[in-house]
Amino acid sequence: MEALKSVENEVDKVLRLFSTCRDSCNNKIDQLIQTVEQAKKDIDRLSSDHSELNLQQSSLIRNICDNIQKSCAQITNSHRELHVPVTKIGKSIDKNFSADFGCFADPNLFRTAANKELLNHAIVQHFLRQGMTDIAEELIREANLSIDEKELVKFDEVDSILTSLRKKDAGPALKWAIKNREQLRELNSPLEFKIHRINIIELYKKGISKQRQIIDYARENLQHLDPVHNLDIQHLMGGIIYLKTGIERSPYKSFLDPINFDEIEEIFISNACALLKLSIRSPISVAIDAGCVALPALLNINQILSNQGVENIWHTRDELPVEIDLGRKLQFHSTFSCPILKQQSTESNPPMRLVCGHVISRDALHKLGSSSAGNKLKCPYCPMEQVLTDAKEIYF
Image (cartoon, rainbow, N blue to C red; front, side, top):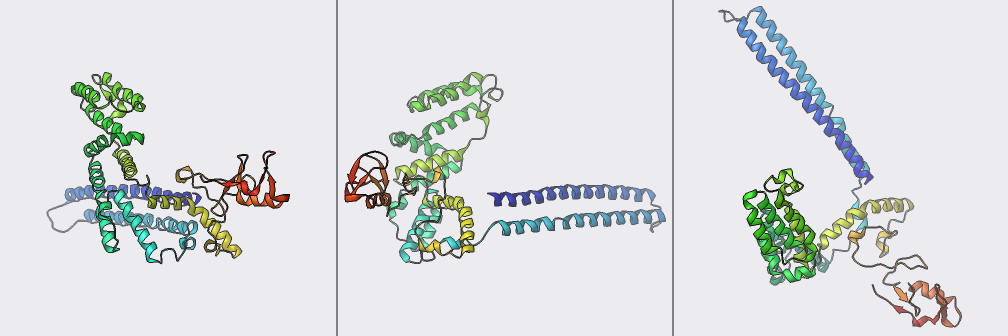
């Protein structure tokens, strides 16, 4: 984040200089145009019947040429002064960002045909989820992927609805939401309400003449919605009392703001993927988001390890040398940290439940057992004793 701020500061400096330079150049050019036009009038006024210029006209033209040359030199100098701060942006990027991202990757990960196919399949699915069917089909053809035709067909309707939403047409999405109403209700989806809200707001924008139509639309389409939307519906219908005096002068003037179809698109993609038994977020998107969060920390760690001569640790262990917090948004399963060893559980060191109900890691269990006589151990949190083999592995 500090690196981004540093580069952003350099960019802001250049933008400010560009703005100043542009305004200054425009002013100088405007002044020159006015001066030339005035000089033209003066030359015409001083002209005589002779075809040759008189002394006054020649002097006037020389002064104009001198002014133009000086202004051009000033414009050139101001433009030249921009070169230094522009160069600093590149230096700042080189200083704050490392291009050696490959040091974190396993070079053998995608060398096998099977792994390459899995990666291409994930990319194809990402494009299909985003409604980019033409790109997905082209990748399938170029990568010679064998994908079931049924998997492509089930995305056709999603692609069609996304295309309509990007054209500001929520009609197909509403039909889809009504058709899958019960399933969407189990997901607590607000999609149908959001689309009805858009339709009602469009009627609000047409004024008092649509008052009866707003009421009829609400009675027909909002009564069956989940009670969780009741407060939102009350707020939506409260604007009716201000139709006569004008929504734009009421507490409901936000109804006149541009409609955010991007939100509808995101909700639809999430719901459609859930109904298609796919993860709510694309695995490719999750991987990129996680990489963006983790890369700054990984770069710092790599620098430290390189200074100590142990940078090969990236490829010799199945875990990172330190824990990196990706935030709740990128956490998809529960984790367990052993209260004894203060370590996060792994496949080789899973959580173990004692007879008393307390949970510790397998490594901690073995350490407690090895220090006890008769293969018995005492729970570190209560007086209960038990045999080592009585502990059961648990799964989160």
